[in-house]
Image (cartoon, rainbow, N blue to C red):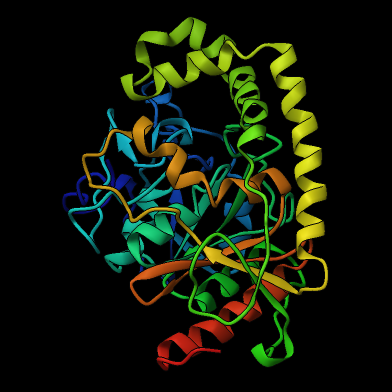
Length: 359
């Protein structure tokens, strides 16, 4: 451990010191950082020190951000509670009795405590948006491939996204400016947008639509996880935490017919999603289908509920923003490539929520 003083328990894997940082960046320990230990949250890589940084980290450093530490996560980013059995359970500083969410829980916790001004997270089934919702901050999953994931340890490659986390929408936009050359966000009026709503009550006016969830796609996600870990697990099973072993073994066991059916379901999911949103600019939903669970919740028992409303956007590759809306969190979803519109609408909604008004 480098840096001065004791790191905040459960949040940092490596807390960096030195210099007077400008904009302070917390980096999820799934991103490679040159010369800095990068564990991917696992004992398998406890002594791993990359030679090169992930492209997203480099882009932010070029823009003047200073990496102040590597944040803890659910092991190999495969979990929604950030209960890491190797490096400590991530706390929820905003709501101590609740889980901080996962897998980017350390990044969310660092923001709540004011230890960073912005953070990098990854999102394969909701791993940016779930911690944002649990900790009362903002997190953005961009369109698939928009933010580079080079130098990020994969979970399920065709579902993996990298993106920003911040205390508000403006913070996420500032990070996106550095992560995506030429990225800009224009102001929009909510009155000029046609909003659809789905999956429950949200504090906005919109047209209710039947937007699909994506449970049938999950075996495709699992097969990709299994392919990533097949050889690594065979050689290092004893080093994997007990709270992910069962999941990894299930993923390795997914057969061809189950995988192929899930791939077909994914294509059908995309067709149904486009049809449901026809005639509307954006979709607004709750971020979570349940209230954030207790801090000691068993991850396998809460995983399906916490990812129910987030995973559909990973299956689609569509941009999705999670932001606080009173005591809850809402999700703003757009079609592929409409990242700027999603964030612009998020700014407008944030202003309305801060003013205690409804659009």
